[in-house]
Amino acid sequence: MLTVVPGEGSGHEGGKDGSPSLIDEIVREGARRMLAGALQAEVEAYIAELAGERDENGRRLVVRNGYHQSREVLTSAGAVEVTVPRVNDKRADPVTGERKRFSSAILPPWARKTPKVAEVLPLLYLHGLSSGDFVPALGQFLGSSAGLSAAVITRLTETWQAEQRAFAARDLSGADYVYLWADGIHVNIRLAEHKLCLLVMIGVRADGRKELIALADGYRESAESWADLLRDCARRGMRAPVLAVGDGALGFWGALREVFPQTREARCWFHKIANVLAALPKSAHPGAKKALAEIWNAEDKNHALAAVNAFDAAYRHKFPKAAAKITDDLGQLLAFYDCPAEHWVHLRTTNPIESTFATVRHRTKVTKGPGSRAAGPAMAFKLIESAQDHWRMVNAPHLVALVRAGATSINGKLIERPGEEAQPEAA
Image 1 (cartoon, rainbow, N blue to C red):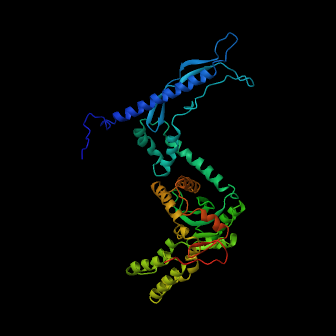
Image 2 (image 1 turned 180 degrees about the vertical axis):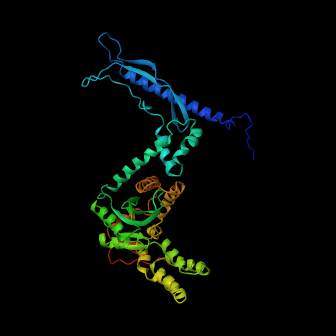
Image 3 (image 1 turned 135 degrees about the vertical axis):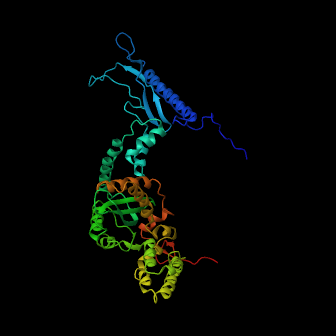
């Protein structure tokens, strides 16, 4: 196989003194020319459209008038120097009497960086880049440090806090959440002694889309904190979910029974397996994991019950506490089997919350935690908002609305008519 190896003078890499590479210069020059051409065409179209506007002496009211002073604009191709054509518009507003001004839709007068660059700055901060590192890190990459001050990034936290407060007060009457995951996430706070406990609820709408329902600062996952959050959601119009999934140790369940007593409960198998293994010696872990997998990954509920009996018989004599962790919560652990089989993989655990908050923990670890209790929920909210754009819908999303409508499932198959029995698979 032939391989092209660039020589010393090929220009594929930047110079040792930090100078930009030839290919970067070509890209930036191409971007500069394209932007200059687009701005020129925009001005010419504006003037041509108003060519009929003339004064009493027959002179045009809208004409070219040289160029504005050059300025640097940060783009995804790097820093590009732009010289914007100037327009002399002598027309006056008939109501206010003020002179009309041409404003470019391509490059507004105040713009110093493109929207894509403006969007990526807070995301880089949220994902671990310290505000003090923006100038040295991105200045070299973009070819300029304009608009990258730490103060600009720091001011974003105030905006995030306002957005998080607006999110927490929004109307929920138009959103129907059929499934719900709940969990409490503990985050260190840099300027406080106690950890921040974030109460998180993510739901599945009737169309199968996952969505953040609520994010609030709670007190050690207490039942009262969860009750306050659920009452607030109910007051804003939230309907009772059909099924809620969470860790068995949460104060969430007492609050759920108070606010939404009709919602069925399901326990997270990820947390339950950890609890069971904690009650067993390490030598018994491999066999226990395999036996537990026979329960949560069974063909249907009947096979799961048979696997529970086998697990209980194998472990209840030597390790009664481990066996009791399964048998005491059996109804909640097997609740997902009463839903369509396509949804089982989503309802066994609280993974939508756990996987999302791995990002939050990474960011707070980099910064040694948020600086205040107010900044913690705001930072988490923006990270989840960013992650939410990439969440996939649940399998067979069309079945979610049927679950809300009261359709039941037997052996994972949806029963459309009451009294109908699920037919066994043909051999």
